[in-house]
Each structure stands twice: as structure tokens, then as C-alpha cells.
Length: 96
Image 1 (spheres, rainbow, N blue to C red):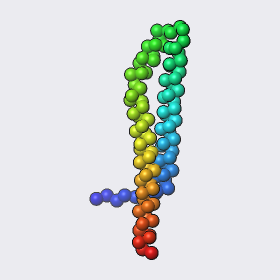
Image 2: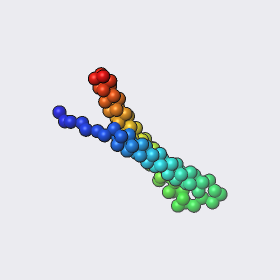
Image 3: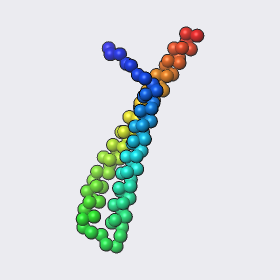
């Protein structure tokens, strides 16, 4: 069996960074959707704009899932770091 070595402060810090990245990614995705929706909502809809929107819409579910997976991993890191601290604190409390 392998040995698990973790610096809980790093796990929490990096987890928070990953969550921030996932939120930025999701915001960029939503901005793209909003921009495309605005383009095709105008009176003149170019065939090119419509084709681009339709193509990007085919990836919408995958992009949303990617943002969620990135967020989930960040939260996993945060929870893991916090669990290590709780375990360490529990061991220390038992020794006292």
C-alpha cells in the first residue's frame, strides 16, 4: 500500500484556485452563449452567425459538464485538505 502525503494548506489553497478557474470558465461559456444569442436575435441574422451558434450549441452540454468536473475536483481538494486537518486535530486531541 502506498503512502499518502498531503499538505492540507496547499490542498485547500489549490482547491480554491481550481474552483475559481471553474467559475471563470463557466462565466466565459455563458458570455459566449449570450453573445451568440444576441447576434441571432437581431433583425438580420447572417447564415454564418446562425451556423456558428448551432455548432457551438452542440457542445453546450459537454462544456457545462467540463466546468462542473473542474469545480468538483477543486471542491475535492478543499475537502481533502480540511479532512487531513480534522484527522490531525483528532489525533492531537486524543494524545492530550
